[in-house]
Length: 489
Ligand SMILES: [Zn+2]
Image (cartoon, rainbow, N blue to C red; front, top):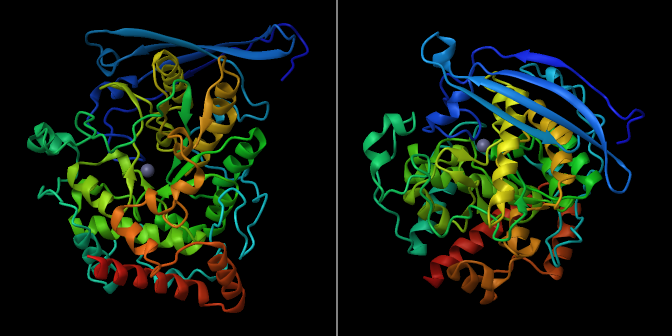
């Protein structure tokens, strides 16, 4: 944006209340990293916004944030420790909501209508031979488990998925589920390196995606939607022409199937983030299968395609969860870390609860930028599209700043930064060689046809013709696939 004067100076001070004393469950915040809790009682001064002239003569808005920090111990009058963090924002969206107004209140006034509503039977132009889009209006919530609860495991559907997982031959480690409460409530498990529990120490396996390989590549991700505010984010991403990966919660897909379709049809990648946002290591094998299976299914029912990536809520994954994910054709995607205590996490989720302020999110963003530009590989950042505040931070501050960064970041979905095409993000369009061997064999045998233009055309007609057809068809495909898998084994 261009300012009329050479210098614009703004001075305001925010003194936040006691915050982040203890990080419990919330969004994708990870329990067990005490250092992350030391942002409490921060006195933050956003003291200057000024214009500087670039070489091209266009105005660049720059702000400097200085944040003297005090620890909880200092606030209590004991030993003091002070740290100063400062960084500059290269650009702010001219329509950004003032930081002081991004707080625990949720206004819902800025939610935009979807720019495009996808038509049933439409096919995405960016995925060759993609199946036709089902009619989202026909989705029946009663065909799915109750929202926001771990699905029951005694349904015929879940039993079928359990058998399907067994038949893959993937060995699931006999690890006992963890107790709720993270590392501090599971000290023995936390120290068990064989478990490779990401939450407690950041252990990963080569099968996890934890970064983008190429330096300056940013694998953009948003979790926990689709929500009413996703439409604001979609409009902005459309405006600046960048694509993201959305890790969606199955229950939210039931709530907003039209928004999921809009995300998919706009060229964004859709991936699995469980049915009820449960901490997966606390669940039984069957419950994990139910969480992932129902989410895969509702996405397939709404989009016509099945994702092959997943993100565990709060990053809660160990080797048992990994094995089940693998058996269900899902590759785990985490977020990057510079060290055990420095994660690529905006902590935007906690603005709404008051555990984090908008200023602190920008501080986190500044730290992420420093780490991102000094590493030899690309990176993945944790952010959310569930709440108004998280979307306001993304569209008002974080993305505009990232987009004006020099040298530029290559902002893209996870599938793209892994040097694959969007079609490789889905079971039906990835091609036999991109799917697990057992599924590939079923597809290549010709006994199961999940994609192809002929199939798309057929589905288009069916979805137009019958109000119940798309769900029936998809259940039929699932049944056929399972039967074929069983026969193949
Ligand atoms: Zn989440």
